[in-house]
Length: 235
Image (cartoon, rainbow, N blue to C red; front, side, top):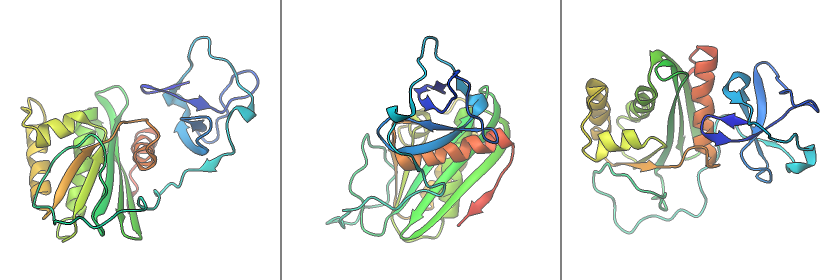
């Protein structure tokens, strides 16, 4: 099946009909990854000519944690404390010990259309997630607002904050001097929220590439759109 721009494996019956459980369908991004996610049935589109594969094509399923997962192991404290910054990088570095890790994502059905956002925040052993419906909007608005929500929640922290997004647009208008022809007030407010943090960096992460917490943030955003509802911060 096709989910946005990604090809995924979706659970179906022998006739190729999706196994829909409450509007959600089990999907895999890679057959041997083992992590099973759930996507809205109406967001899945068939791929012409795709075969119905046997269950053993995929490894044993392990449900992806709905509230994220632990931070990457092996992080080491950097030799020098980062100065106040907001920058983008192609690949995540080893983070300083004690850094707050954030994954922020937006979703939109129709673009413009019903829009929502999802955020995962890892602060040591504490974890918080946000699924918020924004009403009618664009994908860019949802992506920027997700970053804004994360930065606003973390205002006042003295820890390094490392924010991941799969939105090159957000990185461009927030850190690379791209001119914001649309959404200038939202861009301004998001920049101000980032500037209020003592030590913040913004990183690009590829979407739908099996990056676990980015997939969780995407699920939270899509759930908000599918259900037209907001959970508020949990955790």
